[in-house]
Image (cartoon, rainbow, N blue to C red; front, side):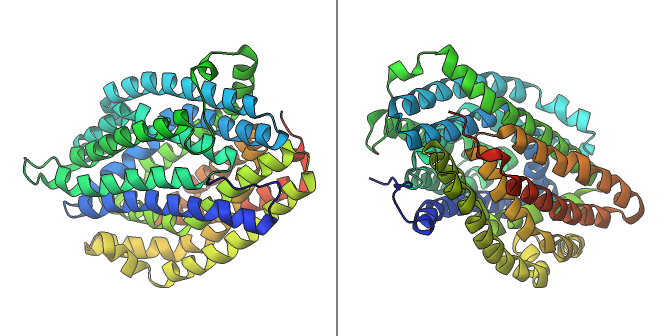
Length: 445
């Protein structure tokens, strides 16, 4: 069995047992983004810009469902820590049903109205055809994506990070094989940007079938049945109480990223391509912190369920210390070798200049952003998603967007990079103070 016994193992041992599969999961997910960028970059800057523009829009609409999966992790973790295993299964089953229902509706609406969304964003005309094809295809595959997210969250909350890692690895491997075939049309006409999106949807659909089999069969030690899908008003209210603030925070945050992306797009394909490369490499640099954050969320939830508040508090700082150290080393490399990193994806001179400038400025703040992820994960694992919502909204709406307008007006695209730098430093400080206050240590089950 892959489950980590959080309550009875040494804290550091349990942290890294949960973190390393999560780190590999993030690596696989980042490699998926890199594979897309690598192959689309061979077609040109308009093609590589399509996912960069599309993803904030997709995440904006899908974030409500994403908040529900946060509720499943927190509830499964805390019920497990409390020893209420039947309630863990009920929370898992009903969360899965809600997520699927929502994803079907959102996927259809998003796919149908992708063109209108891009027009509202005032994206340059030459970018719209590529981005629309990518966005609509990904939207129609929403049920597959959220089904996988939900199953993974359930296993993680229970204490099994290895099974989600394997699910993610299979999905990414399948996508990596399909990507060049679909994009360049080996054996059939080239599909370009549409091919990149289609390979993602196909790989997710295939892997979801496998993930559901693992969950319902009980082969990994945790299982649900049809009876756990039957609605319970009390459980659904609890799921919504935890999930809706997270959903609201995600959606408002995503809308902020949508605004930032639209602003950057107005500077043209060069700036958009540069930030696209930067975002992908930043994801690679911070995968260690996201792995530790996921482990922290599980451990905080189970510790609080077992009424071990001192351990819940201590694991947050232990995890954040490791995060700062590891991500700091990686970002030192991106600071000094930003040009070389950009060249991996695209070799156009103007993009190389902007990409190098991005890494020189933003790299300095990424270790602090990584630490913020740990603090935010602790709040979510504790079920205090209102606090998580507050810090996430503040990071972008209160700090970053005003700074973007202020610095962008006088410094152009470089000012946006400085706005990212300052907002990351500021929110890490605010979140640290919130953790120190200990208001989040009250369990929710």
